[in-house]
Amino acid sequence: MDLLQKTYEAGVVGAGGAGFPTHIKLNANVEYFIINAAECEPLLNTDKYLMSIKAEEMIKGMEHIGELLGAKYLTIAIKQKNSKEISILKETIKKLDSKVELFYLKNFYPAGDEQMTVYEVTGRSIPEAGIPLDVGTVVSNVGTVINVYNAINDKPVTEKYITVVGEVNNPRMLKVPIGISIKECIEAAGGSTLDDYAVIIGGPMMGTIIDDDESSSIYIKKTDGSLIVLPKDHYIVKRKRKPIKTIINETRSACIQCRYCTDLCHRYLLGHKLRPHRVMRNVGMAERDPEIMKESLLCCECGICELYSCPMGLSPRLVNIFVKGELRKQGIRPEKGSLDIESREMIEYRKIPTNRLMSRLDIMKYSDQQIDELKEVKVKKVSIPLSQHIGKPATSIVNIGDKVSRGQLIGKVERNDMGANVHSSIDGKVVDISDKIIIEIEDNEVIL
Image 1 (tube, helix red, strand yellow):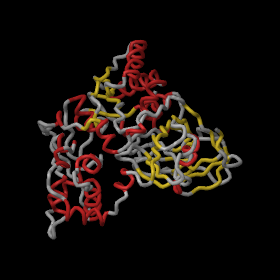
Image 2 (tube, helix red, strand yellow):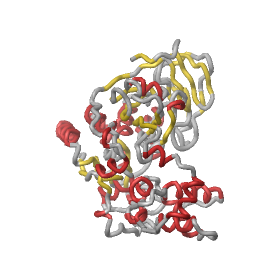
Image 3 (cartoon, one colour):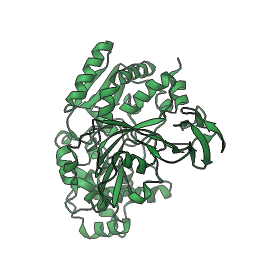
Image 4 (cartoon, helix red, strand yellow):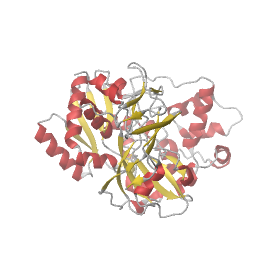
C-alpha cells in the first residue's frame, strides 16, 4: 500500500489548522509522531468527541503513519482533565496491543499550539521560523489521522464534525457535508437565541469572525471544526474588529511598556526572539528600527497578548499582523533560526490557565453547554471551495450540468503540487463553477 498516494487521492489536509496537505507533510522520516489532541481553545469539543467514537480508527491510522515515518515514538498529547477520552484511548490501545503512548498535558492555553505541544512532549524547542520536522517530529491532529485511516480504505474527505455552541437554542455536535453554509449549521443547532449575532469560525482566541448576514455565503471547509455564536457587542467581537488605525493610535498613546505581552508570549518563552513590547514601542516612533520590527514575523497570532496580557486593552497581536503585512510587501520574510535554542526558565510558570482565560473572555457561561448529542445534517445544496488548504487551489475537472456522486473527485491537483484534491460531498448536479463548485439536488432545504 502506498499511504502517501492514498492520502493524496483522498484530499487529506490538516483538519484543524491552516490545512497543510497531508501527503506532503508525511513524506518524511522522524523520531516522533505526535497526535495533537489538546484542543486547547476554550469551548471546542470536536476532537474530544471524535476520540470518544473513533478511537480505534485513530489508533490504527496513527500506527500506519508511524510506520511510514519510521517513528520510534507514537504519542497522543491530551489534556489530563479529559478523563473520559483517556479511558477510551487506554482501552483501545490495550485492545489493539498498540505501541501508542499517551502524554498528559496540563489545562493551559496554548497547550495545543504545535510548537508548544512538541516542546511539552519532547522537551525540544523548534527554531525560529521552523517546523516540527526540524526537531525530528511530525504533528497531526485527531481529525487528520482519522481521515488518513479513511483514505487507506478509499474514503475521501467529504464531511466534517462541527461543534456549535454559544447563543444557540440547542448546542450540539453536527456531522455535516463539506460545503454546507454556516447559517444552515446554526439552524441545525436550533437557530440563534439572538436576532443579531456574530459567529466565530474556530476558537475564540484565533478564530475568524463573521456577521449573521454573511453566514449564508460562507461555507464549511476541511479545516473547520467549530462555530461559536456570540452577541455582536461581545468583548471578543469588539476587540477583534477594532480598526488598525485606531489600534496604532492607541498603541502610541497608551502602551505603558509593562512587558506583560512579552513575558506571557509562549513563543518568547520557547526561546524565540519575539518581544511584542518592543514592536509596540517602535510602532509609536517616527523612525522605526527594522530589526525590531522583523521580530513580528515570528508571531503565531495566538491572541494571549491581545485578549489576556495587556492591562491597557491594547492589541499587540493586531499590531504584529499589521507590521508583518508591511514587511511582506517589502519582500521581507522570517529567517530560519538556529537549532541551538533553549526555552526560557519561566516557561513552566507562565502558562495561562484555561478557566482563567475563559473568565477574562467572558465566555464562562457557555462552558457548561452539553453537546454529547450528534446530529447528522443532510442538505440539497453545497458550495465546495476549490481552495481549502495551503498552496495551490484544485482545478475543476467537472462541467456545469454534470451529475456527480458523493465522494467523486471534482477538483484535482498534481501529486507533487502543494495542494489537495476536492471531492463532492453529496449526490447531485453541478450548477456553477468559480472559485467553488456548487452542487445541488432539487432545492435548498436543510433536512433535519
